[in-house]
Length: 325
Image (cartoon, rainbow, N blue to C red; front, side):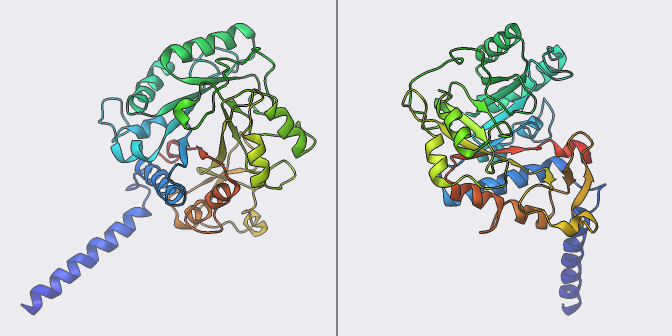
């Protein structure tokens, strides 16, 4: 009997060790599932503080199904952890800005987007196009599909487009929940605004229902709760939602959390630099040290966003699983 108990304990220990080993074994890692769990963890943490907090992952739309394939069943745990999906380049910008996205890519993405949409989530599409005819077509195609959209005339997302006037689906409504929004502005790079006041004045002189912006101004200072409250007012007197951008699939060397010693002695979870975006580094997003930077404690990025008074978070580089796969 004692020998049987001994072997049972030994067997359990081996299972635990095997599980821990697989977590760090690239051949055994389920990269899509690791990202799902990361997003779900952020959602659970944020909603434990603010039950109405909005969670919107951008790209990586394949995570809506259990296996990440078109024919797979929807993943209920993931779909219930989020409120919407952001998708870039759906109709314009996939290969080159201001050029139509190949029809095959649009069709592929829409299969997954519609799974999310049919499960009650709002779809926010950012198309990169600058000619007026393409911008008009982008808004029309997205509206027909049941999505809300933003035709960005700059890939840097550093300006408020001057076209169309008035903005598409402009309205005087108070926007209380994500599903109320009929349009949005994606303005995460405030480099063109000399001061916070200039940025605030530019935004409050628009009627966008929803603003996606950064927690930090270009001088590195955070937007305060008072400033966030100002930004929630539309020109016509209605209120808008404010959603804060946060990259979770890459680390950025200009963020508050970056430590100078990482430049010469990087932590184990920090990977190579993105060749297309200087200062952005791939991360092993399943690593507990990286995740602790993002959520779960008083010093985390998510807590800063919550404390500032944002209505939700826009999670970028969700498709980091493609890099590791």
